[in-house]
Structures are given as C-alpha cells and as structure tokens.
Image (tube, rainbow, N blue to C red; front, side, top):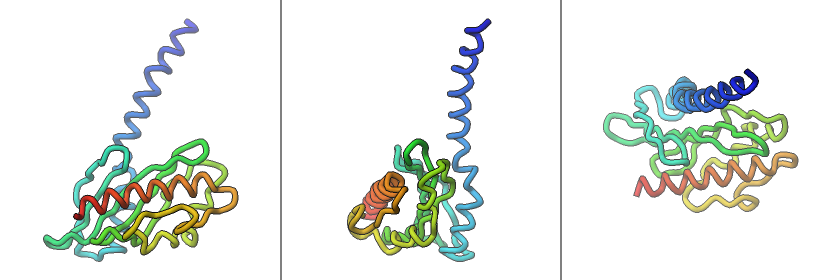
Length: 163
C-alpha cells in the first residue's frame, strides 16, 4: 500500500511535466499576438512555432510575403527554477524588446523590470557579453547571467537563420 503511492507519483509527475511542456506555447499565445500587434502592426501575421532544440520556439512574423522579424519564447534557469521570457527581433536579428513572462523564484525577480531589460534593445549584431553589454543586478546575478547567455544563444541562432 505504501509503495503504490510512490509508484503513482512516479507515473503522474512525468506525465504532468509532458503536458505542461506541450501546452507551453498555447499558454503564451495571447502574449505572442499582443506583442506582434505592438511591435509589427495590425497587418502582421505570426507564423507557426518552430522549435529549435533547447533554444526556444521561434515565431516568424510577416506582412504579406516579407519577413518583419521574429518573436521567440524561451526558458532560462535562475538559482533554483526556470523562468519564461519572450524576445522580439527585427528582420536583421536586432533585439526590439525583451519581456519576462513568468518568474518563479522569490529572489532575482528584478530582472523582470522593463528598465533593466531595456539594455538588450538594439543588441544582436555581435555577441552579447554579460558585464560588458549587460549589467548585473545585485541579488539577481545568476538570473542576469542566465538570461544574457540564453539571449545571446538565441540571437546567434537568429543570425544563422537569416543569413
């Protein structure tokens, strides 16, 4: 009897994680549409999600047949847990906006501040370097480094796709 409880937990937890992962992009679909409208205008269309390994989900935005940019959903790891964020790019892989969608930890949430995230805007032509291009926040150093490294990884992937 005692062991069967743990067997159920061992079965249900991975199933729950799988279901959460499959519904991840659906959860943020409203955020993606809202960001598309704000950044690219009313006539812009968001394409289907393209999952790129562990990098994130890429949503290319187009008007008529021209690619206007891309919105990327991604996860990064803080001190103890993942957090979700969204990046908007123009057609040249230059960052237009970064937004932290969900931050799940008690400490380090300061990286969600629009003021701190503004330092990413305009970056993307070259590698993004923590402490050079992006300054840390006291008490959120791990999250700052994590999101910076992840954004650099995503930006490099964007540049490869647009070449």
